[in-house]
Length: 260
Image (cartoon, rainbow, N blue to C red; front, side, top):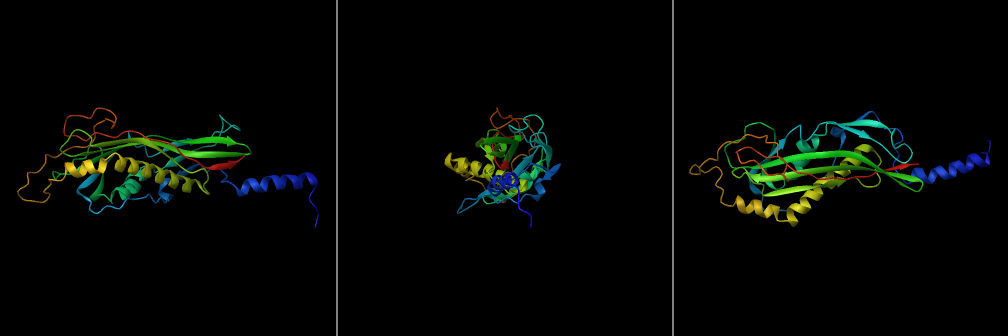
């Protein structure tokens, strides 16, 4: 067997440690789908759920289904690989819906503008402001974070004001074996950040108090007026004063590695 030349042998020694220590994305696919992302967001233990259904409002203008992604680093700040992240609304229809199921009697996703039932319920407005890559050179490595800024607002159906609003960031870790795994880390980080603020700031307790007198299903209870989803107001903005649902606020960041 032929021996490696000294120069080639040195190159092999330099490359091996780099490959073993990071996820490499020197060649992205043209597109990735959130349908292939398997996230497992954390959940808190609650003795009793809020006895109202939660309706998550999915507005394509607030939560785009496709994001244009671009990898940029010190090597190619302007001409890095470009690709698409598709089916991103799965974040709401699957991941957020499943996570909030631990806290409400029922969780459903509705489109903006859809009529809502007359029964007392909670409206959840969701907004995603950005999803992007953030490459950080670190010596011989490049760490590529996947970042997201998003917002979430919750209010009882009979109130035009949000009981709780959240604006924050989510991000992947600094290493992931596939882009789909990095997106799963992004989802988990985003939802965990919301749940932390929701409990620390008393958001869940406020909703419990505002719905404590509910008599859902009681024939003597006066039905709430039916509402329509779709007001164009972020949680951080002043909500509308009508019976329509107001949308949500903001949040962000994320990470993965690549060899220089």
